Length: 427
Image 1 (cartoon, rainbow, N blue to C red):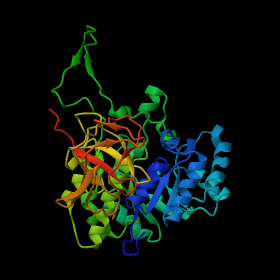
Image 2 (image 1 turned 30 degrees about the vertical axis):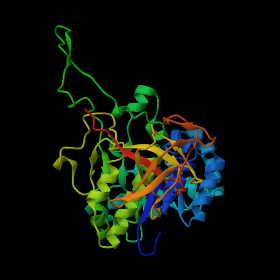
Image 3 (image 1 turned 60 degrees about the vertical axis):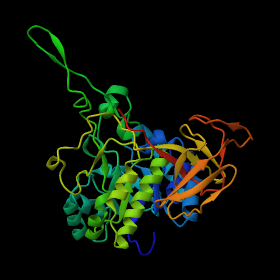
Image 4 (image 1 turned 180 degrees about the horizontal axis):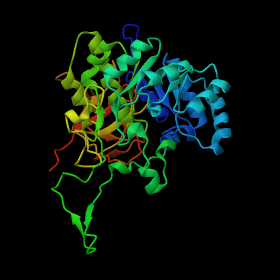
């Protein structure tokens, strides 16, 4: 963390690639899981033990921290595996363990007493009594329940000034109380609190009424665009309230949800919240910029959640239109680590202008050659390719999503930069 910015920005690392991107785009710390004891174990399959170790080492080499998620709810049959798992995480030299249950907390303190404990939001801490109890158990930081208001967080901080408090500022919101949902388990056998939620709350549903006397059943038809997604909560977005939260002086870390999201999501959310944080310390506030960037992501609409004011005061916390909406921009390419090529993510053509999204504080000078040009317009960087030239020397008229051949850039770009274009308006 920068010494002039006394808040930790914690970004999701679903795999090694996303970890590198989050670091490049301004994260102070990363969180991720290894295997079956993480609440995103389907995403964490992209982390094997070797890549997990490499990710932690890379994070430390950049002067950042890595917190391991151990927040699943284990069964008796898994306790031996859990013990072995704790030793593996200790060997990886993680900076903290994010734990949800008292039993796992006690086991971690017994087997790996040198690793600090962060209490997961799954533990549902919403008041001073619970916070005090966990603090006395040795918990260093609590990720408070997402149902908390800022005033309630302040009360905990006043009572326990040495306890670190972490809040979610962006990402998917669960229909259930702090994620304790069984819909997916009942319908698919995929248990949310063991890391394999099928997101059933996002599905389309049809409604029927039945007359018990006659047995007649009828489908309820609803106005297009209204209804159907009754459990589909909008995504949390607190970018415009960073100043209010920081001024409370109660929060130690801002957390972004999204280990299963795309690499572009990891980049944009991390960079946007890093910008908002540093804007505050530079006496700036650019809400239009923050929302413009976050709106380029796929989302379910945005909500301020519970922290600033209660949802029932707004009555707009559900996305009735779709399971997920496309963002305002289409990601066309992602620059490889060598900076000389990009991989196509969407149809890319010559003589078309693509905005370049750079890592945090990266710089780029205008240039041109026979392959293309880079120029600046209204403070943004753009790429226009004159030809689609593959690494193997072939030239194409256009390149489409799914093509795995790297495309040559006219000059070296910062690794993990993205190319994007504004999406066509939907009908």
